[in-house]
Structures are given as C-alpha cells and as structure tokens.
Image (cartoon, rainbow, N blue to C red; front, side, top):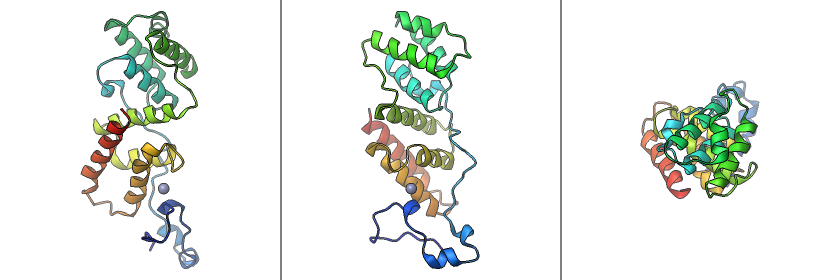
Amino acid sequence: MYEIDHGFSTEPPCRRPIPADVLRGANAAAAMPPRSRKDDGGVHVTVASLGVPAPSTLREATAAMQWGVVAPRDVIALAADLIAAGTVTESLAALASLYPDATAPDVFSLSSRALVEAGGRPLDRDGEEVSILALRVACKGYLAGQLRLRVFFSWVHERVSHDGPDAAQPLVEFDDELDVRKASDLRNRPDAARLVAGFLTATQ
Ligand SMILES: [Zn+2]
C-alpha cells in the first residue's frame, strides 16, 4: 500500500517516487492514491456567494472568470448590481450593457477599466493576484456549500498546484492529505472549513 514517508522526503506525497516494489506489483494501478480526474476544472460558483456588490467583488469575480469559476454573464450581471447600488462609471455601464453571451476577454477588459475608474489598480491578467482572487471565490463557494469537499480540493490541487502562490499551499497540501485518508473519515470536514477560512483571512 502507498504510505506517507514521514520525515524522510520534503516532497508532497503526490510527487514522491512510488516504491519499486509497488510498481512491480500486479495491482500497481490500484495502489495509486485515489484522485478524481473526471472533474477537469469543473468548479463553478454563483456570484451571490461573494456577498454585497462592491468594486472588490467585481475584482474577485473578474479574476474568477479568468479561471472559469464564474461565467462572463455573472460578471455582467454583477456590473448591473453595482450600478444599481450607486457605483456608476463609463466602463461599468458599458460592461453592464454587454450581451450575456459576451466573451471573457471582452468582459475582462471592460471590467479592468471599470476597476481603474472606481479608483483601483488594473487587474494583471497573468499575475499572482488573479490566482489568489479566483481561489478566494472558489473558497467562498465551498464555504457556502456549493462545492463538494473532494471536488473542491482536487480542483485546488490541479489548478493552483504546488508551484502556485505560497498562501494557497495549505489548501493544495490538504488534497494530498485527503488522498491518504479514508473516504469515510468525516473529521476532515471541520479541518477543511478551518483551512479555507484561514486562507480567506490571510488573503484579505
Ligand atoms: Zn500534491
């Protein structure tokens, strides 16, 4: 059976070499840590779980759209909510009036301009901030009960990975821990919620 090697390797379990005797075994495939591969990035949350519409909410939702966590039409709807709540800028109005089938690049560029008009920094499409904000949105969806534990953490492991932002590493490593826990081990649920809440606090 595949086991964690305590205190010997600093590599996460998913990156450690599998012992040769396991590889030679007839059921080597069955000995691999269980991981759901059928959910290839399929993590989607509603914008409602982000809380009161605000420029910070628009920033998070736009980053999450880059990662496919929210749909472009959700960001467009959020722009309309922001205008209704009293934030009115030229680009925000243009964003709110886009057709629901507008593409992510169109929504991103208008939203980024709207954020600057509202006094914020532009969103760096390729920077670490997008990763952190997109993950924050997924975390809020998880805490709101919109994502199942294994789906959420498998996605974090795949999408963020061990090479991702330092702040997210406890969440990535938790997925490795889940791989070696028994599926029936319900104690991981409070652990998971605490970790996710800790990430949200640390990245505020
Ligand atoms: Zn790993």
